[in-house]
Length: 155
Length: 215
Length: 103
Image 1 (cartoon, rainbow over the protein chains, first blue to last red):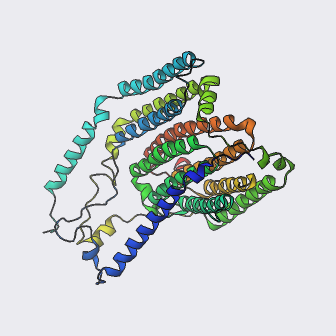
Image 2 (spheres, rainbow over the protein chains, first blue to last red):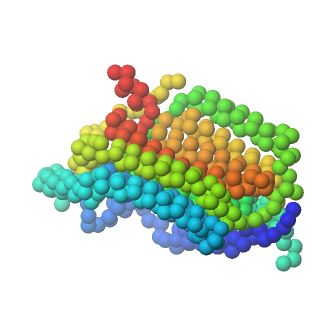
Image 3 (cartoon, chains in turn orange, cyan, green):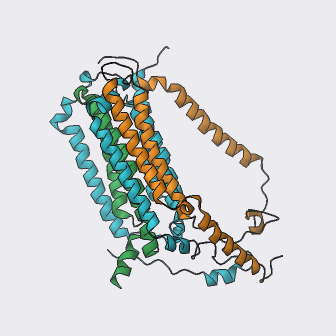
């Protein structure tokens, strides 16, 4: 076996760092458990805000769908960036033997992906992207709820 | 360094990583809360990158972290956030114990048989350590992908924008329904639950017990 | 050097675990997570074989790059389809849809 420098030997500091990080988290959790006062826990103690705000409604509500568009766009740009990262870590665009053929492929690749992204941004309406209609619905619902806010006796 | 054996260290590292990955994969499938399951999947994907470092594929490790941990687990976590009924672990349906046992037996049998294939069959001998030549040659990889097989890259770009346009047009198709969905049962108009009268709120919001799924 | 069979055994264990999850689970998100775990196992197997066979080295790694890209694309599409499923049937559990279709 031809023995050159193995890759994982270069990453030994990463492993040491990761072990140190895990040990630090465990030590901090244990120390705070040891040092904190152990008092009686009741529903007032374990609520989100012990004094002040009154928690209203479930914490897990439905987020608006239109922000999912940005996640899908991010994944496409992410994959495009990975391909260009491979290209930038090589010498293909500098070597004379390859640069004249590869550069056209790079241009076509970027044009296809960015053309798709631009088409999508044109295709969906503007209010879908910035979430104005969703915000309007939220504001109307919130205003309606505030009118009938404390009929059952809050504070 | 005295007494430092790289081969032994590599085996220890492999076993450590394998244990972590298997435990995280089990947790990603079996954790009760689906948000934690999605997070455990992200951790598992980033620990799999450690195997690619052991296998002398640095670019694959980087791409695994960039795309799997950065993109795919983000998609899964975001979709879980968009589905409030999926986050509620009491509403989730589980298979019957009999279906679980049958599936476990099938999975174990397939795993053991393919494991025997990996260890025993004669072609395993043809992959010998003597043939291994270690080279972390990113230049050769880029040449393979961009210069010799450049059409694959364009095909990947077409596949990406096809799925992108399909996904976005599906999202756009029912925009009116979507505006109704955020005012639904779990939306902003959901009945406010004050801490004081939890009892009446529980009476009002009682959900039917999830039925057992027959096999 | 860790022998090839260790990597293959680990890959087959991941594939079996993901297949078990895909067979047992009712939630579509968990089924997708099981599929991704199976995909990770396959990727480990292909990269291991690519390391132990020099003629296959660049082919294996380039194949994995294409596989990761297509995995990103199909996950994005699958997630949007799951949102549509949730809109239509009110849940992402597989059992409910069959019940509602029967009615």
